[in-house]
Length: 222
Ligand code: C5P
Image (cartoon, rainbow, N blue to C red):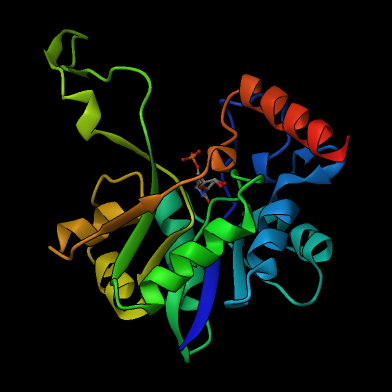
């Protein structure tokens, strides 16, 4: 079974600030997206990578990533970007990894672990970490409704891995308000398996995340 990867990289990155689309923000001199794609290609399993870029930057991103990577225009929401990228995968890709461009320090070992679990027969696999903050559910007025038990909660990372046929069916189910791909698959009633995530696979979302990413890179070069 061939394994392919799709990378949603079309977000504007407004929470990060700075103007440039987030995926092209440099970390220690190299764009986050390039780091994320190189990690996917470093996996022994991944044989094709499709990137969803901001529509006005498809050519620029193609030049940054080089001829081995397919770049398609992304959509208004993350789900739209993933759907377009999935359609561009080769027909014989049977397992798909969906990986955020915004997780540039994800270790290749995590990519391999997710791919291996799907190839071993799990239809959907996600890397997770325990949460350190207590999480509250609130209502529209900001009042607390409920406090879920923290030891039963997990924070979800990418890459998330799926049998391609299942992910395609999940994405046919439009307009579900989910923030990750496994959320769509859960809605089908398909079991989703968790494996241990990696601290370095954190998502660069806010300015403080950039500081942490730069510090980790400086440390690993030292
Ligand atoms: O917004 P969030 O941080 O959850 O975005 C996660 C990933 O989805 C990022 O890599 C971002 O570039 C991508 N994205 C996208 N198309 C959008 C919105 C976000 O590809 N319309």
